[in-house]
Image (cartoon, rainbow, N blue to C red):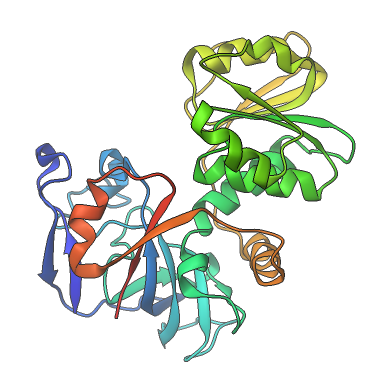
Length: 302
């Protein structure tokens, strides 16, 4: 099969190439997915799991990309809940070859059924950003109707999904970004927008939840805005400053079939729209990974 591989950690993304690899092996409880569309996260070439397996052993050449939408081609021994020919989507395993390939082996628990009327490109943009936003708002911050949430980075993949989920949950949403993000933020439904280059962060007032994707000074200043009993959730790095009478949580997203199903339903119904601005063929993936664009670039595999 064709796949994008990387084997030089010092090449900083420029060591990516289109390669012929063996068809993947389906281990126990695995699914082999014939990839229709794949997503990647900028910076994933810096993740330890891109270069080593679960035991810490070198696994290069490795295949990047950790979001997949496609069709089940094969079931491993003991796999239940999915069938050959079924449309599925979800995150792939962190320490195994990823989705920038014609086929990928994934733990079945990572995947959820994809409705027939949902486009593979849209679905491939959702697993990591969608699950991250969902888990941050509802699992860790326990966001409730009527509460106020401050979402940093509304122009990004996680922030844009978080705004839509929070609005649907009945929260008052304050979004932050740069001036160029304001029109997008308004279209997503933020009640208030703060330009981090021109406005005072403190003008957001007291909030029940902060979702931080930026880290650093912005995250630390945001802790002062959290009401007693509130929560700051960050995916940037572990917090060094905590709210006076609240919680500060750092987490890494986890696969969850039930949550993926909820996201797919919203995607099908038009209640949730991931930010996809560009699609590229698998042969163009090396350039796409090293080129910064606004919104998500999804790789289509034909």
